[in-house]
Length: 193
Image: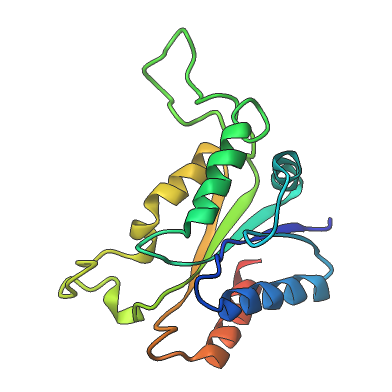
């Protein structure tokens, strides 16, 4: 069975953005070489909401490639989520919120229409890897990247999707190790797909 991969480049250009685009290109090449079908969307280009919903339904796995801006996604991807994901609540991505009129207090968030599909976050940070999962660190206080992106994980869970292990590049502004990041990405994709 052919695998269908949908990659969303969430980068918005207030910096050059070459790393995120390069990661998308590396992923696209990786999957194409393995015989997967790949579709992409970039926040730098216009998109059609119905086409985006179709890409989500078509995909076996969705990858969000994004820089982390102020502890979250750039505004253009947040806008995309509001537009596309809200449009998908009438059955394309989820069938309501999962509750029934017989039991309206239970099963909130269980109405996902994308069961059996997966998603992966691939993130670029200025923060060093040592800033996470360490109780003595000032900002994150022992929290992980997945803790930081917990609301995003809940969004995809709302659609019934399962996570693939998150990938991250760290310290990309002050202490970049881009070639090592590319190697780690290749290994990550080989391990997870």
